[in-house]
Length: 333
Ligand SMILES: C[S@@+](CC[C@H](N)C(=O)[O-])C[C@H]1O[C@@H](n2cnc3c(N)ncnc32)[C@H](O)[C@@H]1O
Image (spheres, rainbow, N blue to C red):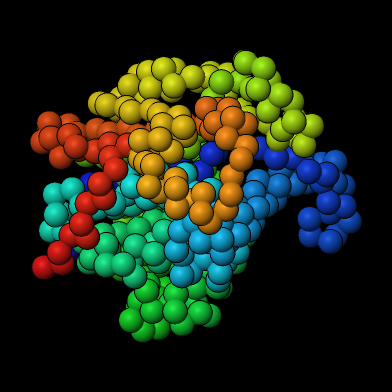
C-alpha cells in the first residue's frame, strides 16, 4: 500500500503535571515512596488521572446533549468548544485532497478519546487513513482491554480477531494503532511511531497539520488566580510563561519550522465557529447565566493550528479554525 503522505496531530495539554501524594509504594513492595523512581511514578499516575477526569466531564456533556458520542460511555470526559474546534479541523484535514489522498492522524495523550470510533462510524476514515494514539502504558492497557472486549468498538478497528495484534506496548490493526509512549521523550515518540509504520514526524513531514489546546494569559488578575488555584492543587503548567499569549504561541510555531500558524482563543471559537444558532441550541440544553465569567475563562485558553506544505501545493489553503461550514464526508472510492 502506498505510504500515507499527510499527517494531522492533535495533542492533549502536555505541559500540565499534576502531583498528588506519592503512594506508599507503587508495586506494593513497601519500597521507599520518597525515592526518585517512586516520585516519578507518582507524577505519571497523577497525569494519567487527568484522562479519567477528562472522560467523566465529556460523558456528562454528552448526556446533557451537547454533542453525540455513541462510544464515550464505554470509557468514561471533555469540553464542548475544545471538541468542536478540534473535530472541525480534523474534518477539514480528512476532506482535503479527497479520500484518495493517504493520511495519518497522530493523537498525543489520547487517553480515552473516542475520535477514531466516531469518525470511523460516520464514514470519515477510509482505507487510506491510519490513526496512531499515544499515551502512558497504563492508559493504553486499559483502553486496549476495553476495545478488545467490546464488540461495538472491536468491529470498528478490525473485521476479525486475525486483524488485531495486541503486544506488550499496545494494540495494532491495519488502520488503528494504540501505543505506549512517554511524550516527554521525543526519541521515544519517534521510535514507537516509526516502528508502528508512521512515515516521518511533525514538522519534518512534507505536508502536516498540528492542532493543540493551550492555556494563555497567566499574568492578568484572572490568570494569576487560575495559576494560584492550580498550584494549590499541585498542578504546574510548565512552559506557560514561555508562550503566554496568542502572538507568542504563533511565533513559537513559526520559529519551530511550521509554515503557517493560526491561533484563536476559545471565545473566538464560540463566536465564530459555533455561531448564534449553535449557542442558542446550547442555551436550550442548559440555561447559562454566567456569561461574563465564562468569557473571561475562555479568553485564557486557545487553540493552535499549525501547517506545513513544503511543496507549496496549497492543500491547506482553506483550513480554518473558525470555518463554520463543515466539509462533506469524502466519498470512498
Ligand atoms: C487531559 S487527558 C486528555 C485525554 C484525551 N486527549 C481527551 O481529550 O479525552 C491527558 C492525557 O495525556 C496523557 N499524558 C500526559 N502526559 C503524558 C506523557 N508524558 N506521556 C504519555 N501520555 C501523557 C495522560 O495520561 C492523559 O491520558
